[in-house]
Length: 187
Image 1 (cartoon, rainbow, N blue to C red):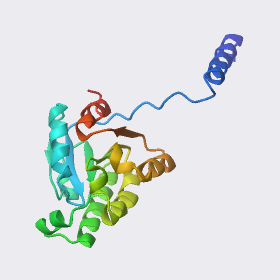
Image 2 (image 1 turned 60 degrees about the vertical axis):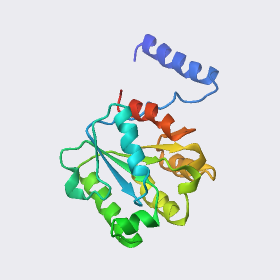
Image 3 (image 1 turned 90 degrees about the horizontal axis):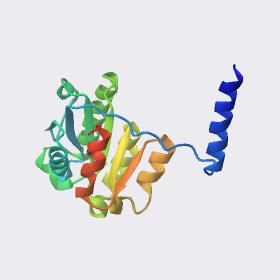
Image 4 (image 1 turned 90 degrees about the vertical axis):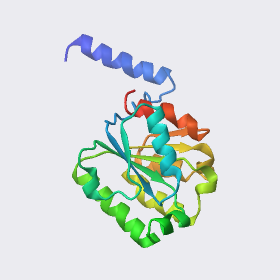
């Protein structure tokens, strides 16, 4: 290696140390459109996600109970985490059927090398035992997560994202999710 190359590397290392020794912030992952929006738990939050995508100018299709076959033609799967017993009942699903549906959907997305973006928009009121089970099981499949701050008061999203090296964007209110959602798609 030439002296100039070594000096450039050393300068970069010294600049990193001078900046507190921290690595440069990770570049958010780039997702592609069109995207398929679906629920993990059948909460009404999936409809909020569709509204956010529309406001962000992102071509999206809402399929509340999407299955693997529904992924054809899409480039990103957006999984909205939030359980609702009322929503499950209206969809004719019980907890076990919903979890199996989401597992199969994530397996299909993985087989297609389709990235998953997880959203949690319902805040603290959408958290509960069933939602927490779904977060623990399905969030690790995400390439990125966007969460309303009140939904992570206990740090569950932050902990899982840190352990799995998943970029996490926390917003104060649901409407604030439009900008990070657009940015995730390079808009």
